[in-house]
Amino acid sequence: MSKKIMKFGIIGSGSRGISCFGMHLEKCEDTEVIALCDPNAVRMKAAAKRFAKTPNLYSSVDEMADNEELDAVIVTSPDYCHADNSVAALKRGINVLVDKPLATTVKGCKDILAAAKETGKTVMIGFNLRHDPTLKRLKQIIDDGILGKVFMIENREFYNGGRTYMSRWNRKYALSGGLWIHKGSHDFDVFNWLLNFPKPVKVSATAGINVLNDKNLPFEVEEGKPAGPTCTKCAYKKICPDCYKDVGTTEEWGEEAIKEDNYSKDLCMYLSDKDTHDNGIAIVEYENGVRASHLECFVTPISDRRYTIIGDRGQAEVSLHDKKITVQPRWSEEVITYKIPETHGGHGGADPGLVNSFLEIIRGNSNNTSTAEHGMLSTAIGQAAELSGREERMVFVDELMKK
Image 1 (cartoon, rainbow, N blue to C red):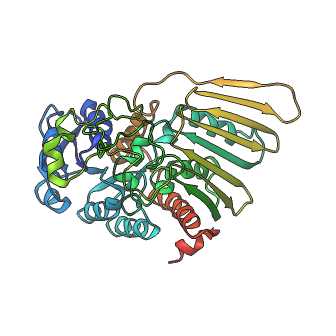
Image 2: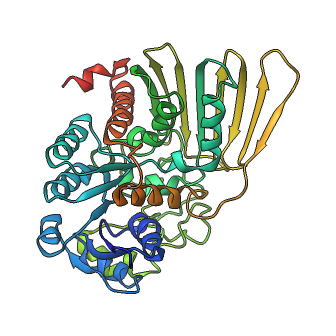
Image 3: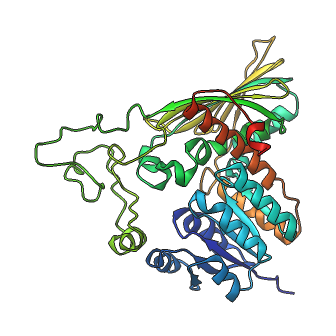
């Protein structure tokens, strides 16, 4: 007996939606991407060519739902659209996988939860770090009690790719909710997940743009020869060490697509208008007394997430880049090293694990362990961190949850 083919739509035809989710679904035997939804018709048509069987194309979720019988949609639109797109799909009886963050505000998350409850459909949040093999092994070490009672946890994220956040829509607070949500929602969820979801109580954060501003261009600007506005058009692209050389070479991001919505993803990361940070530190305190610290820096020569987890029986040091965990018991000179085998797929093999987990849920073979409630908890911490930095005060998470 042949398997039932699950029919998918993808909302948002950018790199994440197509290269990650779309191409993985293309390889599965019982899934088919039959529809794309994006207001930019040029980009969507170009993306559709990557599929063996061309999906139907729509400019709105309602139009797509009117014309297709979908088992699920994957939401990879800009973050500020997540709530509206997810609610629209849920109300049409469609299961939803939302790439992180669930929404840019707690209110948006609550709207999604309400629609899911009303319709009984599944919402899974795309926290791919939970599927990273190194973090899965770390979770097992903590749950097995090897570190004893954890009371402090830290993550330092170094990301050599400032253009990723300062050149695209992510740089705007109104579109992304700020980088404590767009980027940090990953990391706050990892804290919550590793600690078995204690209630976060208060958040303090500080952040700023120390480097990626107009005073720090990495070359001398000649009189009458301005830099920017994009890497593609910049007079200094051959000498700028931060030039984004790959953009604009495909239909999805070329001139015709730009004419549709005036969106270029290679704005000069030094000169772009932005109101998010290029570095910051956030501290979270939980109801059980555990303290968590998250540092993120986008001006660095390395790319890695480095964790320190301290319990009353031992301490663990983790490098995601090196796929390595080092545990030192508290009253011993012994050092235990775990080297995690190499895996294939985006984000160190985490992306395929995320998609496969969602497929098992909608096949009815697995329970949802990455819920909308988890997504709201992560967004609440991120929103509190944004408020803390912008209003220069400590923010209690209940301020947001009770609204």
